[in-house]
Amino acid sequence: MTDAQRLIPPYVPYRTFRNFLETLREGIPARIDRSVWGPRFSGSNGIQLMTALRVLNLVDDQGRPARELERLVQLEGEPRRAALKALLERHYAPIFGLDLERASKAQLREAFRSFGTKEAVLARCERFFVQAAQDAGVELSSFILERRRGARRTASARSRPASATPAATSRPSDQPSRDARTIAAMILEKYPAFNPQWEPGVQERWLEGITRLYEGMRAEEAASRP
Image 1 (cartoon, helix red, strand yellow):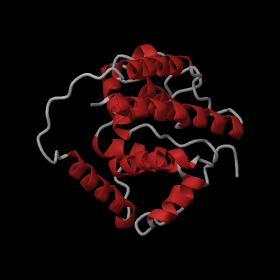
Image 2: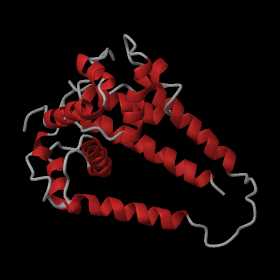
Image 3: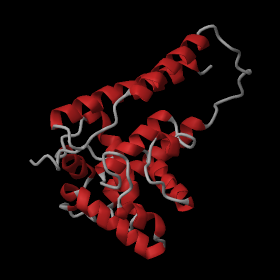
């Protein structure tokens, strides 16, 4: 397996990635850094976004936009879908080695494992690819898409309140949770940016660390809810 194959695939929410491309229609800066994405995206999403841009070679190690990013931003309609598909084909060779119109969910998961991606983020890597592929007009099998449709139905059912509940009151435990989230955010700000040129082992340790930070922030957010 080559080092290129072992690069961690993007795992930022695809909506964040696409929305960012839309914001660049206002103008593409000479360098993409926190001052560009910070006003629009949270610290965690922004870091994941920059990781995706670097992995896809849309910016260099200093955050300078590549010509391909400029083209992707400027194109519309079918030319844009074709450019996005070509980008995916270059960076997801193991995935496009499948017959995507017939592949099962398990086959997709096995192909993603060939990147050396940790199990903790495999599902997020898959979601980014599936949504990007749909945006690019890539035909995907009903087996790959079935679980995503089921997940949406389940999430919708969970969002319906079973009955009216009294208004929530503040709890003494809320303040420690907010403090913990602030500490986590401060750590994220100092966390080094992902570098695709790192050795595979360094990439995996970086991913393990940032995944723990994200999971800790989500746990604190959940604990702070009434």
